[in-house]
Image (cartoon, rainbow, N blue to C red; front, side, top):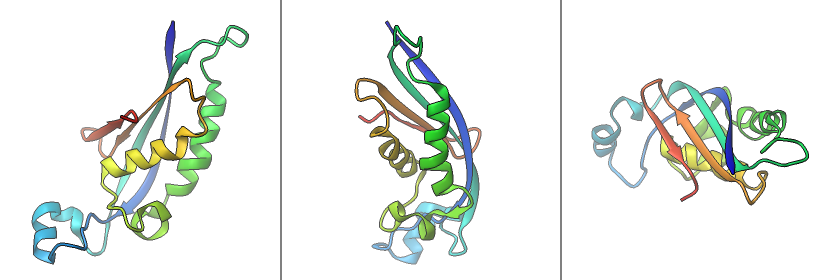
Length: 136
């Protein structure tokens, strides 16, 4: 029997969607306001879910306190109140789209989660716009 435990978190960050291989015009057409050279920000919502078998000794899939501390250390401390393009090394050469941010978060967390457990990250850029990455 597998069970999923989830933890919600949030962080505030600025970014600019921009492909340096494209002209300024093409960047404006593809990314619109998200291509502002002065950046723009989001109040990101994050849900991290871990799925696995319940440990018969603890009754936990994963101690939610440990998951909370992991998200704070690896994600919130690294991303909150940052300019993703300028302040977060993972985005030095990676366009910080919601999709790329979600994959980056998953990669930062994966090695800290029991390898027999599944990990899923859902990143909300707005309450209506979100992406989910499961490591596929």
